[in-house]
Image (cartoon, rainbow, N blue to C red):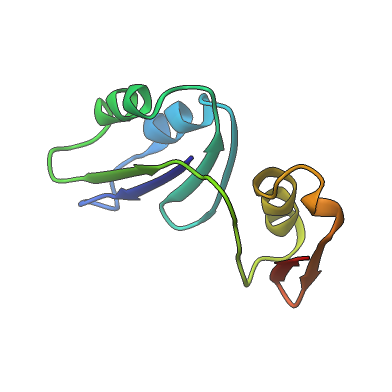
Length: 105
């Protein structure tokens, strides 16, 4: 699942919101206010859980990840997490990471 946040007052303390997201399961957070989470929790339940931590002017977008994934510009641990968690089983053995880009054959 992809969680995208737009926080109206970016200086606000977001530790409780981050803790809620981390509690959902295996997570990745290497891009601004974008999180990727592997969870069995329903998208509506996550919306309701996170909404309690948001102000009325904040925005929240939840998207399920299905099918293909591609990315560029991530190296090291962030790239490894994406490769290990977003590619279909068995695809990671065929995936190549070169210059921060991932290609699957």
